[in-house]
Length: 178
Length: 247
Image (cartoon, rainbow over all chains, first blue to last red; front, side, top):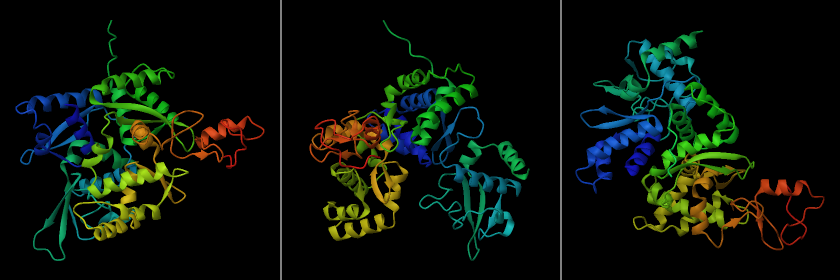
């Protein structure tokens, strides 16, 4: 159980969703006890870390860890404060535009101009060197077929759905507009 | 006669979460965080009970082979807290996050840093490590080129920086405080004859000043504290004049 818990924590730190097959592989020595181990690991994560194991894709059986603790005021957020701030701006923008935005470039058109940070390519809106934000499942980026140069549609990803509420986003937008 | 471990509350969980996402947390920050967590989750708070608070969390972390550990930074002498793994297989645990080349490079970089006089390795030194790199899958020439790209483009060193294995000071690399807190036991047992222990505080010393006559080493903050009260800086071991600049 402790191995599975550590495995889940490490994967979650990198924000990469966890596949059920990977978890099964880890506990393969304990045939048949998989469900029990999973349940115990889930309970440990809740009791000790305040994290909840949630399935975000029932087809492909992928999971993420979300924070179970009641929201606290500002300061002590995660390390990537700047990226999270930018992400929140992007999420709120998508939300305000009716949950779906398409754009070929991330240039000032459509209100992105207010952001000073360089955003990178469409596949990589946060400009993160190795891992695009949609891989983290914050954003759902789908290419629009038959477009040339290729255009993309931006929506909230499953992790954003689970971790942030639309209400939080509204509060954020209201604060920014003050 | 069993002692009941205190229950985890949301305050403990929140504290643990933040400590984990910080990587490493400085002492006064930890104390502020302790207060913040207790106030947010309406748990009893006493400003001098941080150790007990941490012990509660540690009692629940122990079956998971994890621990909140305190260590002293070699840079400023201040206490820092980190959530570490207790299992001896520290370097092999990393194996899932790094490629074979990266692991090998880290091991060799660590050798270099520990064996050096002052606890630092330059990026040129690290690049030269490519010569010694042994991988079954890559030919030496290939490995060299790959390594050059990694280190010169700073991607690899950044990866080690981001995961707090190494830190960069004045253009040279040394082991990050977090890495030292986590791997102190590993280093002391695997580098028994070469790893230096500070003459004053007896802990592992990566960055150190060394006495020219008798070879003992001391942490820079320990040097500063020790010589503060002395008129003439003299080695505590052999009494010879201390030749290094007092920090």
